[in-house]
Length: 314
Image (cartoon, rainbow, N blue to C red; front, top):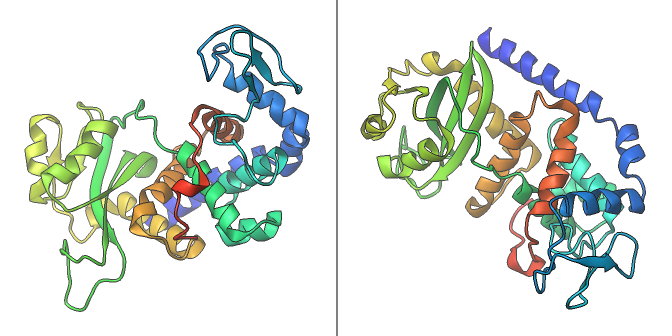
């Protein structure tokens, strides 16, 4: 009964987001090139112009509308230059709409679906998707607070005879932390770890949880040393997951999303898919601002070259 209630909560909240971000509304804001470039220009230089080449802060109009030309070295910079929209292969309008599809699709959008919808090669769709995921990474400025539940889980099919916290090289280990708000999930974060030692578990506590939060974990020995820096950490018996129903439900949700939408991905990319999942989860209550927030982030991130990314996943 508990997990069903959580499921209904999640779907209702997410449908509110989709309602706020209708495709008609999106296209009225970003359906033409000049609208997209105007948005990028205002966001990219919201704190003032600074020449990418010489760091001069004075500019004049560039060759094209919305470009800015440095008055010192003459460098002509477009709104897309040195952002994650740098040298996109299918136009700025299409890239905005692909971003919209990635962030508002109810279950998520894999590269096969994106390629078919936008008329591009699958590799092109996957590589752009990686750019979007890069902008979804946590700023680490808003740590979890109040009551926080922490646990670990594994991704992958275990070998015969493997149980519990195994040392299998075929499985990917992940630690997850989510705020427990009266049995409903609040914000959360997760991270791939090498093993279940205190050393591997410690970073998610230091980067994503307030030191005075009421942290609840199971009885695993790796958490015990963390009580020195997190005095409100309490360890209880898992009771086969009964004492962590909300957390285990979210773990199942993530696994089902990863398996159902993306089918398969290499270990080196798991953190990016985790970033995407929790970017969406952590903004269930932000409704109409989730897309513009992501577009702003893409303006602020440095470009990723296609040559720097291997095509290993969908």
